[in-house]
Image (cartoon, rainbow, N blue to C red):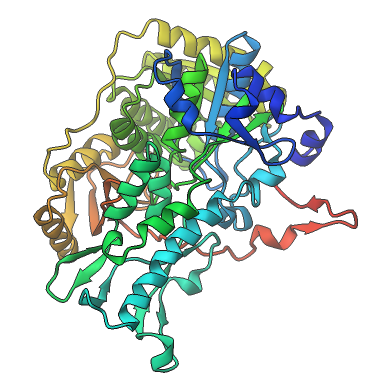
Length: 545
């Protein structure tokens, strides 16, 4: 089979105006970014607010292997299948980050015959949204240090500045640094550090803001640190929100591209799911729902991470109501969770089915076929799903595109049609912070309880004292296990979650709970993907995944 780039280059791409026509958009509704990319004006959403909303389908997964199980590929292929069935369909994905792209995971545009294109542009610089987020984030950081340099009239305690700089690359050397060295003309010396751009609160704000006024309100509420008296300092007090909003002005508008089969795809926002809320922008999803009969979106990693946050954070804030969820599984992942045994690993899949059902959303399992899978193994997965009274379908969108996802699409439509369940959140907003954390840990991970380090206890006490106890929790933990220990595979039992730190993201509107050993600035592997990436004599990129 051809590699991803060879497949993409063998398929004729439509001019983006033809793709926009499928959604009923006119040229006044978007701006061109070349032939194959457009930014759709977010104001279209206001114009379409009274239009009926299409069905929203979430794609999540079992606990993945390091290589991933094809969740994005399934999202794209399922959208193409709906299009083949004559349904007006849109796909909503996150923007890829250069960190994993040059690191270990590779791109985020799908694979095989289920890709969004132009993949090379989307995976690299795209429409500049990542840079806008980085610049807005780092402008605020620069203005904080400038405030310290010029008298510090707000009495900010340099030891309690919580706002970090960001860069969209994996660079472990930047996790903890010192700034302001070199003498009085170079700033106030203090400890600082970098996060990766998708972990920035600015990215979360971009992904959750409703419109420009809401964007500015959220930027104003960002807490950057505390005074010597322990009072919070906001971006509004630093007077940075206006300039930050200007840098994000164009980034707010969703990016429209296409699949290999010309299904419209909104690729917008790029929050990670293990350290942030892991969903594409709410503006893009809401717009797609107003323009389409079927909308297929994905949330990062397994149901314990991306799906839980999609339901409890994104749907709570944006008033979205999903119609069904697809759980992507593979023989490889189930065996991995079972330490080589498919039968033992099935407990992991069953837990993810339970997780989705807790939100009142019907589930369908998509079993991605990989080379080397046997018919016996595939049938064993289907039987296990039958025992759980869940439909499982073999999917081959990687090898056949939308054609390979028709069976899956039919199963999803049946699930939405006979759905007697009612979407519900896992917990109410007014529940105490510790109780929210415990609900997620017990019901989504299967933990028997939660333990808190002393610093986390103090964090929670301060957040509740400041009046932010009613925000949803955004759990940051490993994606490699249902627990907070990456070595515990399958369906762990009799374990406790350990919370090390709790951070307030007042602008984004959630509380970040850091459990286990989790980093907000990843590092590169021993052999990073960047080593094999080059351009040839004609300027074409080679070595991309």
